[in-house]
Image (tube, rainbow, N blue to C red; front, side, top):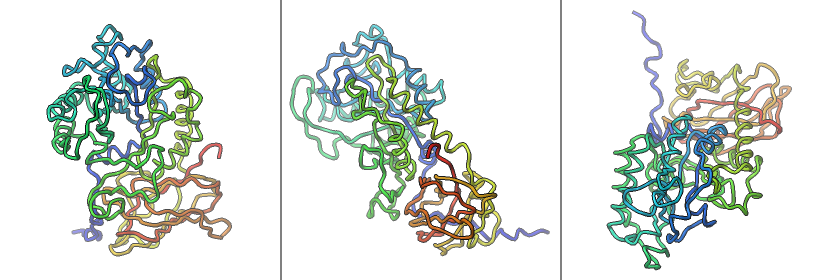
Amino acid sequence: MTINAFAAVPPPAPYGPVPSPRQLQWERGQMEAFVHFGMNTFTNKEWGYGDESPSLFNPTDFDANQIVGVIKKAGFQGLVLTCKHHDGFCLWPSKYTEHSVKNSPWMDGKGDVVRLISDACHKQGLKFGVYLSPWDRNRADYGTPSYITYYRNQLRELLTNYGPIFEVWFDGANGGDGYYGGARTTRTINGNYYDWANTYKLVRELQPNAVMFGGPDVRWVGNEAGYAPDPCWETSEGPEVGTNKSNAWIPAECDVSIRPGWFYHPQEDNQVKTVSQLLDIYFNSVGKGCNLILNIPPDKEGQIYPTDAKNVDEFGSIIRKTFAKDIAKGATVTASETRGNDPRYSPSNVVKGGRNSYWCTDDGVTTATLTLKLKKPTTFNVVRIMEYIPLGQRVEAFSLDYEQDGKWTEFASGTSVGYQRLLRVPEITADAVRLRITKSAASPVISDIGLFQLPGE
């Protein structure tokens, strides 16, 4: 009888909270697009008051395939549509209100923006998500219990009639002045008004694979610039919020608009973020273990404006070219130690590009070194490090060195890693690269180390 010599070397126990399957799938998407489109597009406002006539909504050449096509080509994995903003105007013919596209001149009142966008997403292989503003400056009953019933009825429409939903976006702009059915007053709500727990249950019931932003799955990064802090832990809730000692896995999403505003405004046509700015945002959001949600608003015609489309296309092309070739592939990898000397946890796993293999150390070993000996002197300017997050987030500090002509030089350092850490560095030519994990909350578990060349750097 042959005895497996490694049967007694189990994988590390999970450390702290870990992602749910829906969260892990969402994190792997890395980039989503926001599409702010609605009444504000036609009134040239950011926040409508709620008294706008549905007759104002009338895109002259709405093209869902163009909108989705621009976003898909740029490399985004999903699209979140503002189905209803704070003004209360609905982009679908909701049976619970007259304040919707069904009373607009667009398509003689027969149109459904949500239907057209969701169908285009599913056709082109893009995930579809919905934003439904909790605040409604049009509704007379906003601030009363009946509005919560109305809100959930509309949420049910969106979550049952438009196919699979990957993300439901709830934001925090709630209460204040508004039209409120003609009252023209200010409504103040308390923290318990929305009874979020039961709304979350509704989402889980109708779309169990959807993550909720501003809810139990995904948190706001804290700004609308697209930049995450360093460190940016994926755990955040409980006694030590914003640390890796929290009691819930709630990764951050970085929301930012390609324009100064969230809705299209013609006066901002010359203020569209440049490709260079978009790259900076990418490395400060996706590069710090967050997902990026970039708003790309259609214009009054109902299409992505040419400048926005061009810039996001060039941005996406650079990202694709950068990560098309991993220079670390084929490197010989050694480690200061390997868990139980078990080949299942081999250092070579970190250059295989697999999501389900990893290198790790024995329990209690919280500092370690991985060295990648390259086949030949290699030039790079981007480094990728990934933890195997199904076992939790562990690394708290690390440094990177490169070897050239027998001499080691430190060139970067950082704190949190999580799903992914991307470090954009000055161009380096090296014979070998070394990752030094100098602090870890538990034995480090690393699934990937990659080296890449960002074009034009």
